[in-house]
Length: 556
Figure 1 (cartoon, rainbow, N blue to C red):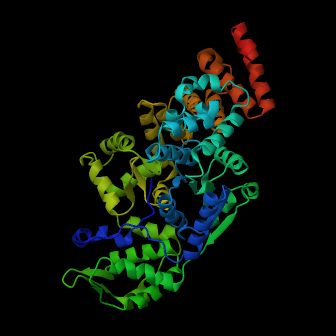
Figure 2 (cartoon, rainbow, N blue to C red):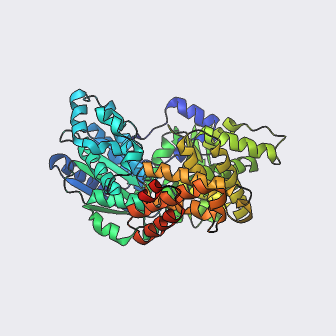
Figure 3 (cartoon, rainbow, N blue to C red):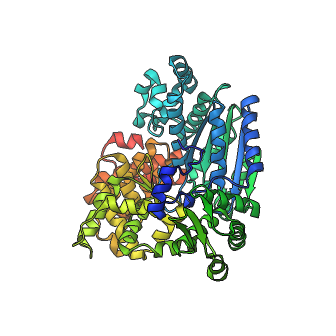
């Protein structure tokens, strides 16, 4: 779980910073400045769920870089000190993520927090098991550690039988709502933060809508954040259903807040500042319009250009204010700032980060090692052995990647997007082909699911390099993975892709009968679950025509 507290430089860190200027913590994500009123509104909302047994819905929105995530995480410390629980999940752009990913990440986080809490005992476990009821088993494949709360019911968690029951999607939504009710209590309210909802999938949107309309949920605060400039990606009826109790729109911060941000960061790692810091703040405020992310990137930029330097002898900062005022222009967007940062990296590191960006916003050492090695050996760098750990360290030193409990992730989604945009279409598809092919060799359902996502991104002549029958089978495996997690919309998409790959002609029934039949059966089931009756009838008609046994005809 992330902490809302901000790490400050100690004397030992300062020594490291001076010997390695690129690691200076003043250029890490900023503490919260200029948001006192907004933070107070969040704390008041939390107090209401604690005192009044209410369900508070909160929307936080603003343009990229205005500090939406930092604001919400600043609430976390107050919640923890007060005995509550804070869990979070985030959606990602331009990445291959699992169905319901942010919500299930937050649910898994919540399970871990409850299990680790000081007051957890068998009485509390039994209370949660009773509250979850028989529907708790529906979450076994999506929420880690929930099995601890299920007792003997865990034996009923059979994916194949559950998906055959009536109204499985409705039951899944009920199970998620019961999960929230089971985890909260008068003594332990829960704050759940879902970040970047503009990138949520349709299944997640429907699930959040169901949660938002549940009048039985209490002692619960749901915070959703989104980018103002991308709000059109969220359907209007979602905002209507949300009926936010607190709506916070964040703008840029004022000059005083800019001064506090910059002064504290520079003074924390020095004995003094050998220039007019207020003048620097006025310049930066004017050039960045007070956007917190732009401020940090501007500081990083003038440091890299040698206009802001740390003097080892005086243990102080020096700055060329005239040069910054006259010649240093802040790029028009975060994308341009990032582009300038990327230009400073050598090509070897750039190529590695392009590959990482296609694997996803987050990735593990295992995911990237084999693929990077293969590309390195077949490419122009075959005489230069791959040192993956060195590349990862350099990427972290440049504040492009950061290490997490999962593995590694980009420090900002716009960094990931920037590296993807550096790739030509054919180059990108060739990499997706390599990534997908490699994932097929790995054990675990998740890799088959990820393989399908990558391989389905390949088109045209590049796709012809891959066995389409194997790809159709991989899509069927990915569909089963989604079905077990009640992501029926995603499952149906994979099945339709598999059917299309085998073609419309008679040939597939001659050469790949079993696969074609299973895909058609799965398609009929998914279309029925999703309420697409015409498509379901068409699929069942094909089953009746092709079935080799009376049992198969009866099942249709």
